[in-house]
Length: 64
Image (tube, rainbow, N blue to C red):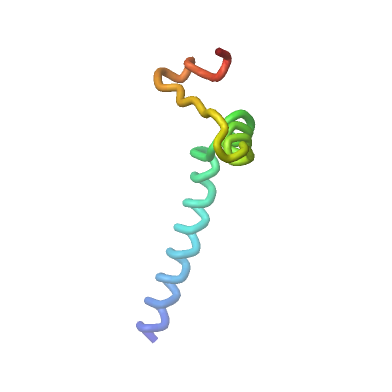
């Protein structure tokens, strides 16, 4: 009986932990609007085309 109780406790703890991680991970997700569009657009470029890399603060963007 004690082994069954321990397994039940481990199972309940695992379920609660997974649910908590899934809930919290929603707050730290990637913004799919501009960042995802930029990444998808980069992948669709023709091979051999010219690319640019912007380095700097977050306000440095592709407005140039």
